[in-house]
Length: 241
Image 1 (cartoon, rainbow, N blue to C red):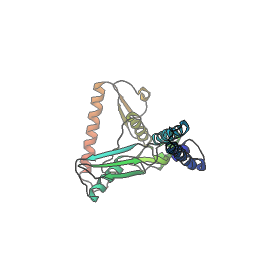
Image 2 (image 1 turned 45 degrees about the horizontal axis):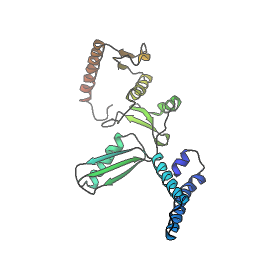
Image 3 (image 1 turned 90 degrees about the vertical axis):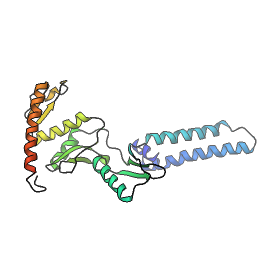
Image 4 (image 1 turned 60 degrees about the horizontal axis):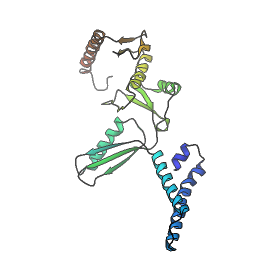
């Protein structure tokens, strides 16, 4: 209730008192119903309404403050501390969300772990917010969004496995990365059979492919370039790039 009230713009003092007032309403309603029962009377309408309203308000606040989370189930009754730490490190590195609250349940035939977001990321991010973070990035880093507390989330190509879980907005994320590649003087290839991103037509250093032949030729060129880089990397010391 406190979090919901604060998100709605209430002062801290008002938000802090709100849970007490709702709990007090439930308590008063319950005591009134108990008094009616002791006196062999049918519980009165005011007491019942007070309890009902308090319960509905509590459930509504819980629903409004529900935070997105990640749940993982392992088909084993136990994981050691080292194994749990390994799983946690993988979740932390692959899911670009800050301030995750972690809990483990190891009772029963399966182990269940849950990571809950402590703070929600911003609902909207402006171009100006993104633009101010771009000059601060290292060469192998890409800005991919704003996390909890409006903190920037960056993806580094120097990581052993630079992957990120994305359930929606894949085209927007690809566009955000492409813009940063172009800003650094790189080249972007777009394979768009439906012509959904026609605004990229004619842009400098952008190969916009809509036909199968164009896509085939572009992918072959990229494969040749990738093979050349892989061959060079085999003969270079660690960290050469």
